[in-house]
Amino acid sequence: MKQLKEILKENFQKEKRNKITFLTGAGLSAASGIPTYRGSDGIWVKGTKFHKPEEFGTFKYFSKNQEEVWQFNLFRKGMFAKAQPNDSHTLLADIEQLIPEDFSIITQNIDGLHQRGGNSGNKVYEIHGNMRTVRCSLECSKAVYLYPKDIALDRIDEEISDETWEKLECPKCGAVLRPNILWFDEYYNERLYKVDSTLRIAKNTGILVVIGTSGATTLPLALVKQTLNYGGYVLDVNLEDNNITKLIKDKKRAVPFRMTSDAFLSEFHNILDELILIHG
Ligand SMILES: [Zn+2]
Image (cartoon, rainbow, N blue to C red):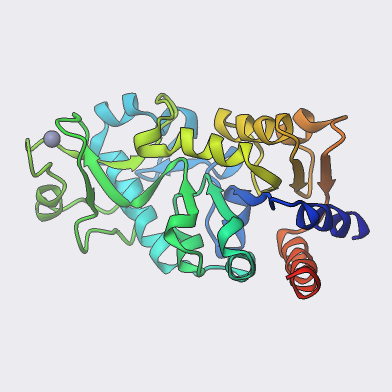
C-alpha cells in the first residue's frame, strides 16, 4: 500500500500536522454480531410484522407504538451489552494511542463499542446518539439521563413489566422517556448529535478515513465534502461501491481501498508507527 504511506507521510511533513479522523458506520460493528437493520435483515417486532427501518425508526412511529419501540430498543440494549469489540475497534484504540492529540472518531453507531474497545470517550462523536442515555419524549427539559439499571430484555417480544415502565418515566414530568438516538424523521443538531463540532473537525482533517458506512444519511456525506473542500484526503474503505464512492468519484484527493477494515487499519497502524519513529 504505497499510496497510503505517501498520504500519511505528506500529512506528517506538514508544519502544522492535520488531524486524522475516522468516520465509522454499521459495517464496522458487523463482526461483533450487530445486524445493520437494513434490507433483508430489517426489523421484526412481535414476531409477525416486518418494518422498514425508515418507518419503524421514527418519532412518529414511537409516539403511536411506544411498547413495540421500547421492546426493540431494550432488546438491542441487551444485545449491545453482550457484544464484544472486534479487531477493528482494538486497532482504532491502538491508533489513538499513537496520535492522541490529532485523533477523532465520528460514528453513526450507537453501540458504544468504540469506547469499550479502548477509545477515549471525548474522542468519539456519536452523531446518531447512543444507548447509554435517554431523554424526555415530550422534551419538558434539555436533560439527558443515564439508562435506568436492569431494564434490558433478552427477547424482542418480551413483555415490558410495570416495574420497567415506571423506570421509563421522565423524572421531571412523568411522560415516557425515549432513547437518546436520532430517528429518521428528526434533524441533526449540535446539542445532542454534535453536528457543528464534527463539521469543524472535518474541516481541520488532513485524512478522513471512511469505514463501514454506505453514506445513506446526510451528515456523513457532508463531512466527506467538507474534508475534500478544505484540501484533506478521503480514504474510502469498503468492500463495495456505495454513496460515498459516487460522491468522491473523480476527486483527486479521494482514494478507494477495496479491503476489509481489519486489513486496512492494521496497515494504517503499522505505517503510522513507523513514521512516528522517523519523524517523532
Ligand atoms: Zn419530561
